[in-house]
Image 1 (spheres, helix red, strand yellow):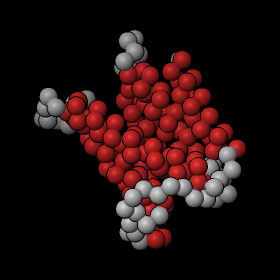
Image 2 (cartoon, helix red, strand yellow):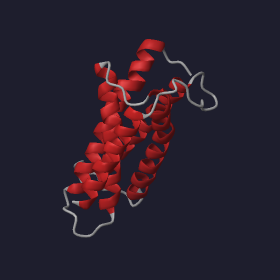
Image 3 (cartoon, helix red, strand yellow):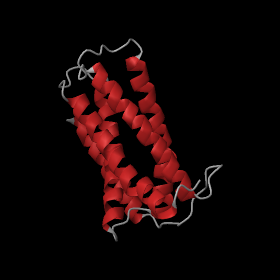
Image 4 (cartoon, helix red, strand yellow):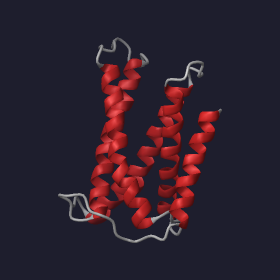
Length: 170
């Protein structure tokens, strides 16, 4: 219960900061990209691909594919792909919060802002429960699914939107 409260506080805190912070409408660009928005779209796409690795490896570890036994390295793949995915989202979230803030003027942007807050709240909750003994067995798959769902929603409302409106711009 404490983990869920802390995760909720993180999600609400990010939302409040994003809403109260005056957007700068510019951010530091990541080298190799034409704009901060292009960097955001490609980094989010890489995080999405790693989230697919997360989904596949978790399904294998939980025995959801008949006749496929998880190799010994599946857990390591799952942990490191998750770490890399979250690491890739940090500059994206920083750009969103600093340059754009929490916005609600357009339905796509509102959904994106809400899922951005939710992603980090669910992630914090999952990390706090990960090593805690006595957590319900269903909690990690549910929280992992919540993180995955949030990342997919963010990717659809930002990267896919960017690529369909601007093309495959680097």
